[in-house]
Length: 373
Image (cartoon, rainbow, N blue to C red; front, side, top):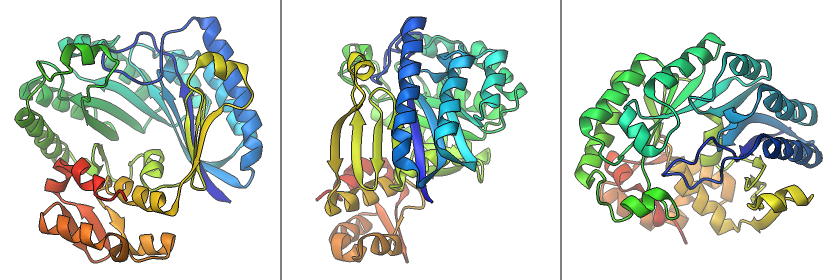
């Protein structure tokens, strides 16, 4: 059987954070249940197309999937297990926000087969959390952490965010230090991006009040050094893990494997065809065919994605993998681009491997843009 990953979108949250441009919003309990029912119907109907696939990873994202009741989470997972062939060792991740965790829910998640949690802390500083519009404090997070560990979750990620308004190098160091003590298996450390249409764009769209470029670079360097000393291996630009604890689901995106998305606005790519669900809730609830856009990637687009997604991984991309996938030598297609960036010290070509250098990671968007036709 071919491998398949599944993404399930839960577009609800307690309150929209000030920096968030994800497809999510608060909702009444009746609206959430209506959505869950429709989502389960979509999973059941679409499963007929994937009888030749084995699901190797599942990711419940949002929004705030942990906002669902224990019964609603069990409802979704029950349909998925009934209609898809799940690998016995499938990685099944759910995003969790502190302040939405209870002992009953944590136990129910384990019972539903969820075996990995991704917890959105962002900062250990209460003032920074308040500024972000988060619903929790550091103490709330610690309580949620205790609940999920006591429930038996031994594979957890913690999301962190640097480059926040008013954030200092010292406060970022404190956040990293506080989190390391908890010994999570995985850490995601992202730099804040100000997106149009968010309250933060109105407040900080011109860059005023944000850490300057030099401070942002210092935070980035401190992240690498502190986490490496604590035993975390950086395997992707923004992701660190203890050996053997890398997120298998995210690596599917970076290596161009098959994934299908269910729920409002969910994205899919199966056999080089990319398709997206409708983003309007009324349309999603009112029609059987949820797909709004569909696009078959050309050979050139597949090559582009192989390069600029694969280069996010610290191991980079391989020339042999490129040749096997596309029947052409990487040097034939991208030789001049690779040579130029190697001379600039932004890429390293070590035998079969092409990867970003430390300098290249700093300007990764510039490098990756050169692999577009």
